[in-house]
Length: 178
Image (tube, rainbow, N blue to C red):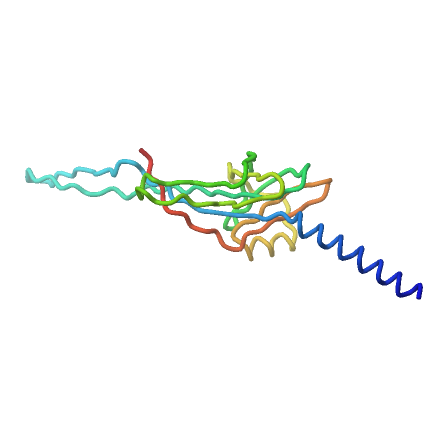
């Protein structure tokens, strides 16, 4: 009889611990948004020996913004670096409130805003990639995560390394500079 109570108590305790872990699970989100120049540049070319002027379109200089978020992140977690498409970047962070919504009425008037992070039980941290870096040592486990996912965020919490991954970056509609 004692064995049954012991097994039941262990199962109940394990079930509560697993439920707590899943309730506080951090979720990672990643988005890509192309930023188009506001003015389309043209270059005038005069052909030799004639007064004819041809205008040639310059190629668009498209910049990309990466929007990376960690939702329900445990307190005391510090972001060290972020890997985007196998390239490491230093990272800055900013606290956001859920839901995180971004609207783009510049390119598509009347378009509905995109909800990037719907809700979170804790804080939502925006991870802002800054400068490209070359990391000193990359473990085999981390190298595998980097190769299998488009985004890997390296964090430290309580002195332990933690990694949050996004397998595919969602593409948002482009935004134009004014």
